[in-house]
Image 1 (cartoon, rainbow, N blue to C red):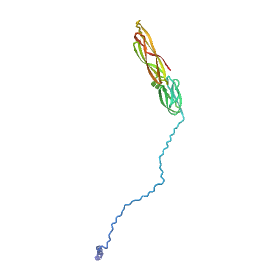
Image 2: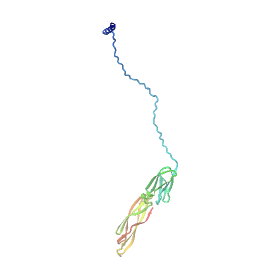
Image 3: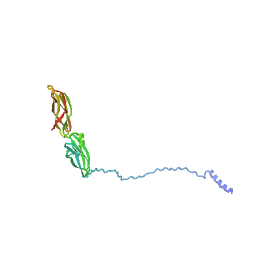
Image 4: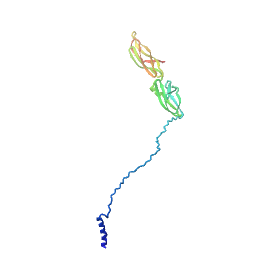
Length: 240
């Protein structure tokens, strides 16, 4: 039995020794790197899309109007009024100006000479708006009509120097005059008696619209000594 098993084994050993029974195994390396080929078909019809905004500017007017009353209170002058730089009439202390304006914001302007006061008002349908410029006129313009005032006096012996300010708040240039006077007493040199007298003089000035002008005038007194002066005053003002 053992001899039967050994016979095939011996035959295999013999074949190996003679190098003819076992085939050689060839070492083959497989290249696994694959370069893909991309086939792309572009779109033949491409549309460029631009974001477009509709910016049509539309001005909408309601067509409705609201009431506006313009007043200057007790200010004693007639003043021109304009709305949005358009003349609309005259306002005075005893007659407010009543208007109807379209809804929205409007600029109201009242002028006293070269000084103009403005206020923006919002008009609404059936809602009365009142604009009163009295307080601002009293503060910014002070005088409603052409006038003159004494701003200083300087007595020196038989002479008094008086400074007069002419004020023209009107819308036109004026030629103005003021009569200045001052009462005084003195002792006569001959009689040594104290007597009373009045010195006066007219002062003139050309004053442009909305302006003020200072004029100085000297009042000459009667000859004597120990003068006692009263407060100078303006007895009359004219303008044309």
